[in-house]
Image (cartoon, rainbow, N blue to C red; front, top):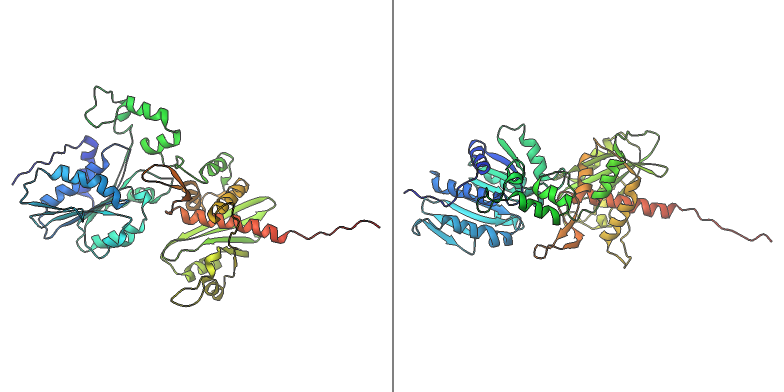
Length: 439
């Protein structure tokens, strides 16, 4: 049976199809309205129809299940409605299409990762990879692809300099199993396309000019030009990091053996742990090192810190380090002490004028103008500070007060704990002075 799907790929979409046919994995960056969702979904539909594998399984993963229901599910039915009803069946509750050849294509939300555990996959894609937890690929989907050597594309737009998509994009350059594409409005031709030349659904020069008039430069650069270091919307520390860059405070900051070192930690349980290494010289805050990892025990991080060639003054940790773990009955404060790291636990913020996270943000903004960062050793942490941003209401588009929890929050949280620690230590160390009248 020959079936023609009502999809005609544009030339750059065709390049993605050809690249994905040749390589198992891909990192695809595409400007807004370039047809990313349509392209990747149709690739999965085509593979599902053509497969000669038994019980082929494919998945399209969007950041939320709601976004799948509102957009991708309609696309899936639109492009497959030409199939005879006897060879395809839709399951509305599971957002799933079953084919007579045994293939199954299902839509998932990255906000429900447990629905993906334990399955196998022959092909999948993750949309907006920079705003989902990277572990959904590394810990959930990559193992699901292993036994049948499945294929996967990570796609989206850059959200900051060194987000998960950017890292995969960089790594793809030297990995023979991967391909990568970076398509902005210049490379797709949209920036020079006239209204008369445009086909239905294509961006044009005049439309981009209209968008540019109402968008900030940072927003336009990020969404249409794929600029990696464009300030993220709602960025909390981003502009201050940019100022540090223009003032040459992102530079080479060597360790000074004559000065003690302070560490500040954000300790993850089933998440990343981040550690900043700082020396103070007068009013200067010299950020000499940064370490981050995930999936490791507290013993691993304590070992890393102890083996650094630094003399430590203190180690700063958030107030919840004293919470007892159910498995051991011990606090991480006690476990760290047994491993040679004695933390100074920050007090819980009780000020009613602002929340704890708002207080930490304010203190971080106060110390950033005094900071000098070692650009080489602290690159990941600097990128986190630049990218940390407030969450956005998916329905209204308004920014919320609370920051988003993504890859950047670990380094940014640890930095804010550093700021709180420096502030509280300054209060603790203030000398007491008494004065008397001369009598």
